[in-house]
Image (cartoon, rainbow, N blue to C red; front, side, top):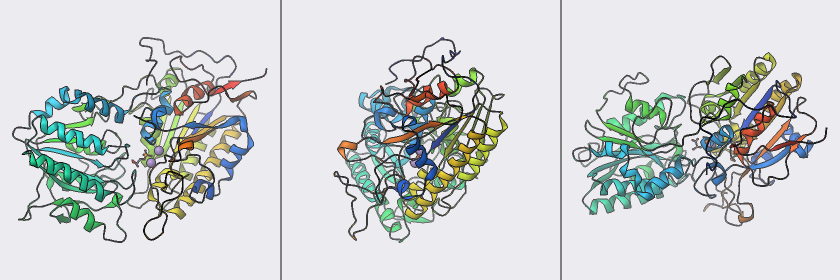
Length: 571
Ligand SMILES: O=C(O)[C@H](O)COP(=O)(O)O
Ligand SMILES: [Mn+2]
Ligand SMILES: [Mn+2]
């Protein structure tokens, strides 16, 4: 991975493409969670009415194809790893494949290097007298965290001196099946009991469902993080239990309960006292490797000056992230594993070559099309050439209740940006396939997919009006398959005969189709007539898109980029 290192010291100037003109407006549309799968009653993209997107597929066979969006094609440890927004947008924007957080943590743990690094040495200093708190997502989804990494870290930390450990668990049900929280808590309790046998005072101290407690992103709703702070740090929550297993089982008895949205809880001792609030002299590690849903908590844990909610108490702790979550903000300042150094992204190249860029999405995906796209870098490369616009997402309402989300608003902003002719690239992320897909609500997902199609129509019409070019793709799958399946591809049913809903991103279990592919389409009146997708590149993925986009802007891509998907034939 990252086989061809970026050319240090090489010029930033891009050569002109020999056949493609500069100066066309290029609309770059990323449909979030929009994979390609065979027609099927659980393929809600197929079930929904999507005439605009259907026309792209049927209308121009040389300008529509599939590319890989999961596993090693996006820098994940194996091809059994489903894709996600972070690695997807990193690959789309960077044009190169980097070993991603999940893999870097695996390597650091298996080699033991994690325990030799500055970050671990820093937290280790508090092991003698303080408690080690581990906060993160309890899941084997491999998107934000992995259970086996937590297990190794618990074992390794205790072998390296941690005597008192408290784990604060966020239940998933989004990247893994709803209800799996019970099994994960059971497995964690077994591990902690083994540690106790070895004399380590180890317990689960608090928890809650990831979407309601702690793991908000892009500052959509600080109340989510406050609920986490109260439970994990202050030891206060509306629900108190003697054990985490009792907590998840009891809280799930509510017929509307769901792992993603479990209320916050704390574990208390016989006298009703919380077993593990964070105190002065303690250490906190947030064990998620992925940044977006840990940055807000990291700010609360690290910043002396903080006004997003009343922390009540700001304990003097040593805090480290599994990774550094924001390289620009240097947040957190201490971390156990160095994040991938994603360099020379297409955004930076294009800005340095005078391309004016507009990027837009709604809050829940805004960082995807800016921060992730630009290699986990916040801010502009050149503020005089770029404009990033965020449309506030709905707060406090699940996306199945408002499944159209802000698709139309994003499309209208994109249309205005295209028609203004102030920008050469207008880039958007349309979130519905993913965000509504994660709710597992069938009817809502169909509405969301239809809204996506309508938004695309608006953008393509604007491109048509200015004689521009569009390139449309996705970052990973989600809404195209919402049934959990057996190895033969047959939907799995629960004990009542109901098909089990797949709320996660997709990974087709059928061996012959075991890769997840997303569509990519190009077109628009500005596209030179001889442009078509190459046929000599059978193994392509999201990382091939950046070179393609550069070509559409009239530039050759740098040599170290994954190859372009297009060629120009004829005269
Ligand atoms: O954070 C989330 O919402 C999910 O775990 C992954 O979805 P995303 O990769 O599309 O953001
Ligand atoms: Mn996504
Ligand atoms: Mn998602």
